[in-house]
Structures are given as structure tokens and as C-alpha cells.
Length: 250
Image 1 (cartoon, rainbow, N blue to C red):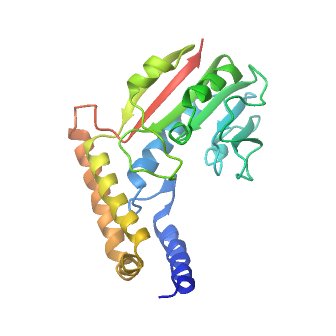
Image 2: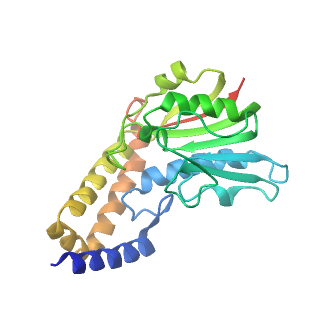
């Protein structure tokens, strides 16, 4: 298969797959990233919804990407996206080497930072800037991977434990700090991502995936159900896919 025809087939496959399984963070049980995407989206959306919808709220979305949570904001909210220079959706653009932001201190009620710190060479600086731009008693909603495959390479530098935040999140009062998911989520996520990564690295595997798409969807469905069951049985609190936290600025 030529590179041109391979790329065309892959684009068609991605459109069909997205139509059937969804796009993170809004996926269903047929998606290979569903168990992580849904749990993180639920955590972030639920905690955003705790704010009064009709009250003026200023939000800074750090590493905003496609702004997936902007739709959960209230009618009087001001939503500002901050991201690297290549993101056209960002209101504030920063370089990957920036350790400070051109953002006034104490200007936001809420900062959201989801799956971002692992891609930064200066995570401590980001946490410091988040604290600076938050208003007194402002809220931080943050998530980062724990047991999760390398993604966004080569800009994927580290993983964090809850203890990192206990030690580094200074100037905050931690309200929630926990691992998200468990043994089931972690195992199914690793298996499904391994299959997906293999297919991305091989035209032959990719072609097989297209031919057997119904089986791939069914396989993902079964493993996602498996994940839910075994997460309930896992009492170790040490094998989650992500760290999630809520903190308020002191």
C-alpha cells in the first residue's frame, strides 16, 4: 500500500471509528481509551458543576487543547484557554520554555489543568504560576497520568504520584487527592493502548485493524467492562491510571 493510499484509508478509518466509539473525553465502551477518558471527564465536569452556574466565574484552562470543558461553564463565566503557541484555540499562548506567564496575579477563580504537567519540563513552575494567578481561596482542578503509556512523544517527560503533590503543592489546601481507577482500568488501558500503538506502527497491523473493526470494537467493550468489575475488587489504592486532585489557594 502506498503512503498516500494508506493515509487516506487511515483517515476514513478514524472518521468511522470516532463515529462509533466517540472522541475523548466523550467516548463509549467501544473506545480503547474509554475507561480513562470517561472517569477523568466525570471527575472534572462534576467538580466544575459545583460552582454556581449564574455567578460570574473566571476560569483559566491550562493546556486547554480543544477546550473540552468549556461547554460545562455557566452563562456568566469567563473562560480563558492557555496553551502552547501551536494551539490556535488558545487565548494566551506560551512557549514550552516559559517558566512564567503574562497573566495578572490573582485574576482567576478557577484553574483547570488536565493531563498537562507530564508534558512540561518545568512542572513546579506551572504549579507556582497556577498559585500566583488564582484569587485567594481560588480552586485548582488538576489531573495527571500515573500508570499510563507514553503519549505525545517526545514531549512526555514524567509520571506523578499523589505524594509528589503532597510535597510540591505549596500554598494550597488539598481537598481531594487520590488515584483514579484501579487494577482493572490500568490493565485494560495498557492492553488496549498496546494494540492501538502496534497498529499505528505497522501498515499491516493497521490494515488488519480496519478489516476486523467489529472485533476490535467488541474486544474494547469486553475489556472496558472487565475494568469496571476489577476496579471494584481492587483495594490496594496503588494501581490507578491517573492522579486527580482538588485544592484551594491559601
